[in-house]
Length: 336
Ligand SMILES: Nc1ncnc2c1ncn2[C@@H]1O[C@H](COP(=O)(O)OP(=O)(O)OP(=O)(O)O)[C@@H](O)[C@H]1O
Image 1 (cartoon, rainbow, N blue to C red):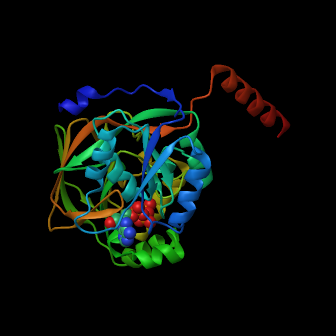
Image 2 (image 1 turned 30 degrees about the horizontal axis):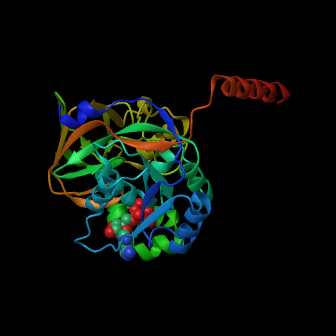
Image 3 (image 1 turned 90 degrees about the vertical axis):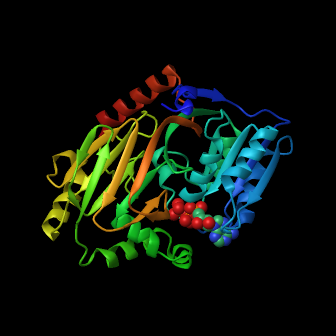
């Protein structure tokens, strides 16, 4: 166990930024299709004049250390740190907050924004800023440590890492998520499974696989599609999803089971789970993506860090509101 694991707990609490506070936002001006000015204006509008909003615009330079910038700003005192960008930006901000109690607010203005979808966060710029500036809850998500870096969503080896490596930023800006799908289709043709060696805590397997996904979150591109059931970012565990599909029929079966949410019934999918560590190697070096960015090649060693970062989520409904919602749902069902 790391000392970070001792810090953690999974309680969901509610907090509200008060006036006179400072928030710090990391903004990727090149992410997705939103402009930096759109984000600045929305933040200003929602936080008003009582709250100081300091914004750092990322440069994308090789020596830029966003996590370190976040650590420095957090040490000065902030009510929250915002991550305005895609999964890469969110992951870098999260790394800077690991082991601290300062919550991270996600403004999902990237291309895929998978982590925001995983937590069912508001997806528009306006709604995301309203959540950060209003009342909110937090949940403590797990993280995956690779070397000195931390990741919070998914680490993938296979078609997903080829897709991420080969999708140009310009294509992402012009075509959004369709750019990823197009690259995936072009890499899919002729793709063959590879022999992996996977160790998850005490369990060791040697499958031939077309895709290995180390998942803290289960969203597969767009909800409701998921890599599998029971993959949750705040359960203290990391799941390994091994896909061995090879033929067109295998993939059709897999798509069918994914649509039905019955991936565990598919003979070409296998799951492992780890609370401590995962080690993966392949017969030859394969690219590895982590939270949407290329990290390097296999082999890779991942340490599980449970409940590492507090993330801002919509407040849980009160019991009365939940009862009212259930009553409305029942009425709708009767009417239908
Ligand atoms: N000013 C900038 N110019 C060019 N690249 C940048 C800049 N700022 C950050 N980057 C790069 O952007 C990448 C992170 O992008 P991010 O994940 O935020 O958005 P996205 O790729 O559009 O969204 P998603 O990951 O959700 O698909 C990193 O590789 C980072 O180096």
